[in-house]
Image (cartoon, one colour):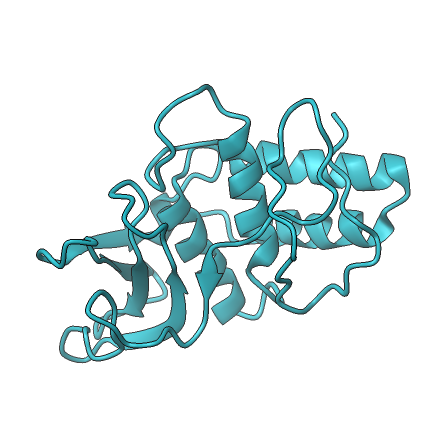
Length: 200
């Protein structure tokens, strides 16, 4: 499978491509697929930094969702007041587009299995790795999730679909090595090693 990136990308920065070309099994992407996350979300009726429990710490990251799509809601991430590195937990708050009650999920990071994880779990785990200084940015882990999700069996496109993120990371590593995109290989190898080091 040909999944190489455009070698002109400046790695280590948040990349916002100008094209929105989907990644498919039969076709290589012209550039990195867009990631659906942002930092410092603008407070709105759907998401706000003020929407946290007592003592929670806002983690400065969010999924933007897909406007109007009930399967892809905006989501903010928080560290609870009683956070414990022995059993790390993040709080995910999802905001329905109709303004109804916020959906709150606890992500037990030790229980996240990236061979079978949804986008919220994958992103939470990426935030955890970044918070520990294990990875420089969150783009690669989300790109791997999106690639695995796009190539999964046809189903409703939902952030809650579970896919094999590890296999996607390995695909990007292999393609980078075979096609001479060594930055791609090194970046995804670093991500893979960070996941392995933190596997509980």
